[in-house]
Image 1 (spheres, each protein chain N blue to C red):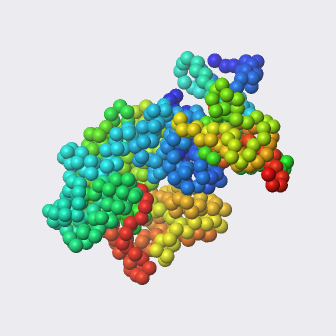
Image 2 (spheres, one colour):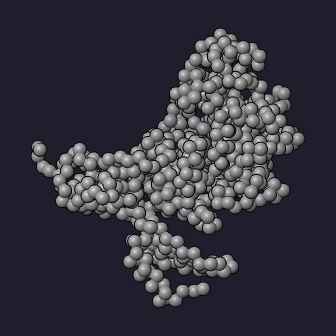
Length: 465
Length: 170
């Protein structure tokens, strides 16, 4: 690829390692941005060159657009890969990249803006004839919110238009609650997103989170790589993901794929993206939830069943190449699962547990893939998220994938930091999980049973995906 | 097209004498990459692609440390270790950006080797997207060594100057 021979990676942790691997496979140089806390990271050891962009705090390093674009240019990088989180969906990054002759490895700026405003996204998608969750436009004040909520029917969810990824969400069960919650939600949205616009949606209690992986190129080709089921969540943070979605009728599966491609095609999407849907188990209906205009944490499960390297595709697409496959060439086979192995203590309400990893032994075996940036002796810094590794397994069917995952998690030795390993093992053995009979509130229900006093199922937590 | 040994040596000499950091030459089935300063290594690869026009593009030197390796200038570099031994104090970059040794093109540099600085004296500017920040000495003493030029990228924490600090009260 003549166009891109050097990429500036504006991220850290396991995704930085992942991007470097794709660069190496493509013969592209990887220049890595690090904060001071990440100088000794695995990605730093693998990169062709490392550039220190600031002190540990993300606000002063990984979130500084001007610094990152300056560093990319000064190192002769033709493109920037934003990874996920941080600036991946900040529309100013592609804008400033464009202004400075640097290619942004991701979708066009307008796609990020349109899908980033959750209210606008709903409107657009509805206009394409795709079902959206019954809901409202902007709710200007408490009175209007109550009226809108009554039209929709309680319980409702109050959402921030500038939110997404489970942030800025409050479930409201009755009108009185809405009175107090509305102002708090607006204030929190203002503080977190700089925008206090709120809207309402119907709350669907027994729902599954089904999302579709999209790839688009600069020649107008848009394809899907199948769906993923990410219903196992804790406070809107995904814990276990899988592909394909179990126990879904094939007609519905095809409808969801088609809906995702319609949406991506209509907004002129390029590069990798994911369209998320809520599947109402009772009504057996799906609704558009939101679109993530970046590569996702759980992309490996799609890679395992499709054989397509999504990060390599991202780079190729950004370099102006057409997609390496057409839709008819995409063959999905087998089943893959991913567990997010985090440094958190489940028995202490999942309190983060940074520290030095004193023992680190990876599981091995057929169908086991580990995406990680950690190693024995590595000090997990306290400044960032707590993801240590993604444990991914694939099998010819779901049962084999689950068995391999149980084996992998059981044989993964980590000492020095608390991890969610025992908790993951517990979930993998539950009947509901094995039957594929879960919904987005199921995991929290399980947690309440295991840790009745310690676990607080209310509230939200920061984070994407 | 293959290069003779003489031609390779000629190219290496030219690169060495130039202010360029790196040369990448791709022509036909030949790919030659030459890097300076500790990473000099001519790599000839056979690339089985159809004949295409020669493209040689070079990356101008921008940094004091132009090794394409994993070390970062702020830590464990020879400069800092040696400096500590001599009792020299580094003035480090408070941010990543492009350096300016002078306030304006026609002006003299803020400091030269031998200049005496006080804590609040500006020693250089760092620019990010047209926003300039004055870097203060932060130490009182004499500039012993200048580690930067103008218009090069420095990283966060990169040593810019080495100062022999005053002893005792002002």
